[in-house]
Length: 266
Image (cartoon, rainbow, N blue to C red; front, side, top):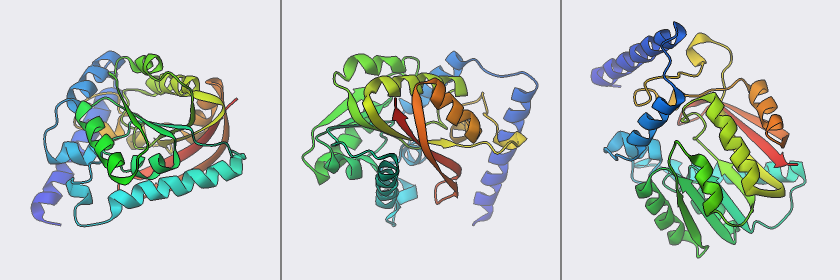
């Protein structure tokens, strides 16, 4: 690592600690303010960092390696294992991915489905995801473009219930933990009875540094929202899911402290 890279990491760390200190003393932003910042960020493609965060295949993170394809392949394998554990053996007529990004997961899940629905808050990213799906299969792709402030709008666009719901590298990017409850209730509405969801969160082991950040979205979007593992399990139950299993990934090539929840609609 160069001296410049080291300096950037130190500066980012200092920025994060400063923002967390402000939140701790009560200087938290409202959910509506963070939502507006998030919408502004994802609607304004600005080069390398934006593409990295959106998981586009030609971003710097995935340049010169097979990680883009490996990430989706791992998630598909994980879902298949969780489906067996949950006794989920229904056909995948409709699969929906909430926060589909540049298609790293879609290219693996779409070939298994009769229809693939990608939800995102960036029209550019939805177009990229659709292009990547078309490169690997003939499964019809429905793009659902929503605003951060109104995720419930997806319910009026997706006309038929889905068998499978997946969401990866999304819940840490949402404005607040409370916003996550809205997404879980939407997910339940989108699924058929007995449908299976696989949702990844960033978990909080209980330290000051790993709490939800609650301010300054652009400088710390990947740490915006975290959950205690037990709290997310209980939240899913309150939203009408039966948690079937959890898989923890303390660290991978992209980040750390990930928990994957297998949730079945009652």
